[in-house]
Image 1 (tube, rainbow, N blue to C red):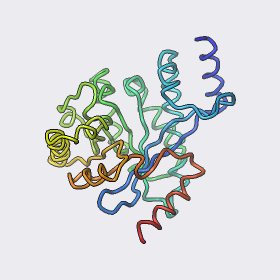
Image 2: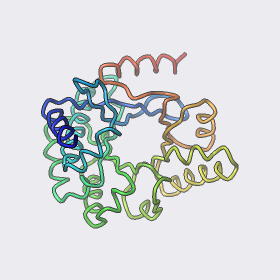
Image 3: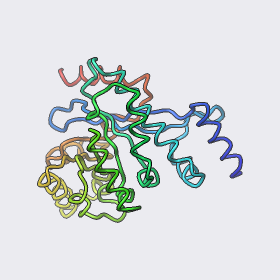
Image 4: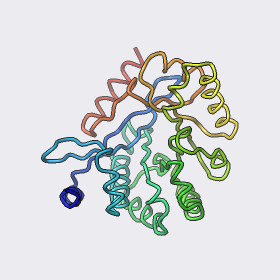
Length: 260
């Protein structure tokens, strides 16, 4: 079975079966789309669209996750170049990087090599890293994060509030945006949970860091997040993950609703 999965993933990588979907993020004050997170989906010939939970761990164990991360990064660069000079030029894209990829010595060299093939505003591309990515190999990760900033990319810290959180990372690394994990949002059904959520947003702002809340699905959650002063909102309430061919029409329809 493991051999079959390995062969299937290798074939998928070779045949460009892994696609970039986008989940859009809105400004909490204006509800306008400002950015999107690049999400991986596998368009498997036998199974159809397969979510990352079904293959990312296999890629990691096979030593293929870096190939996947840089491939997705290239797709994001390509999309930003396509949008340059159009009505979508102000929308940024964040691209996930696993702890394995971020800790590689040649990570930055690969980022440079790929991004130099495309013409776009580098500040419109964000490197989105998980908390454990930073802790995997602190010295290499810190150097790579600093270099990402020097290259002009923005840096997002994903999943704040889940796993083992080290708030010191907010001081030690040049983080532009923190993404508050949905687990924190789900705790806002209590007063203590609401205070925790508001406190995280306030702390980020004190450090001149913007905040995105992930996993917003209801009007009640949307209102709570906005009232807490969180800058941006991501979740099914506004947008599911969409294939690229549907993204531009979605943006246009969303804009029309905002102006109504």
